[in-house]
Amino acid sequence: MCRKLTPEEYTDMMLFIEQALAAELARADASAEHSALEEYEAIEEYELAEREAALARAAAEAEDGRGWRDDEVLCPVCKGGWLLQHGATIMCTCGFRLQTDGEGMQLGVLRQALAEVFTDHRERCHLQPTFRVREEFGAAMLWSECSACGFEQIVL
Image 1 (cartoon, rainbow, N blue to C red):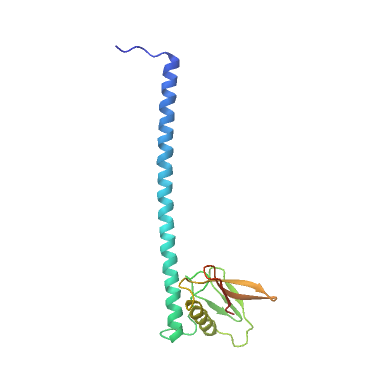
Image 2: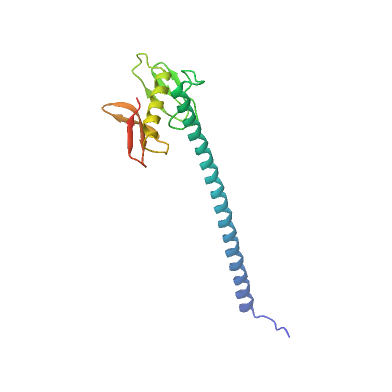
């Protein structure tokens, strides 16, 4: 036989159901967020690997001169854009910007310097070095670094 719930029992039961539903929704939201984050991270890792592979190919091809024009240089900072030169300034759409001395400095010189850095680093480490502009000795210089092996070298 069913008995009628008191108002307090009814309120307690409804509160319990509401809390259970809220907890289930929170778990579902957390799971969906986790899945979305994992998917985003996987895409980021894949894109980074693609950019690193493209940069490594560019360095290898630059090393032996296959198929590259002197004015085609992949940005070492973002590994996705192509460098442009305007006067004494070398730049990329990612924000990379380097002032050169302007005396005959062309993208081909930078391409060759990058290839040499990759070769030097590859002799001691299998990972890809990173690149950034640092102020040293009163001038902005492009540096190559690898936190895994401690490699540091001025590119330009």
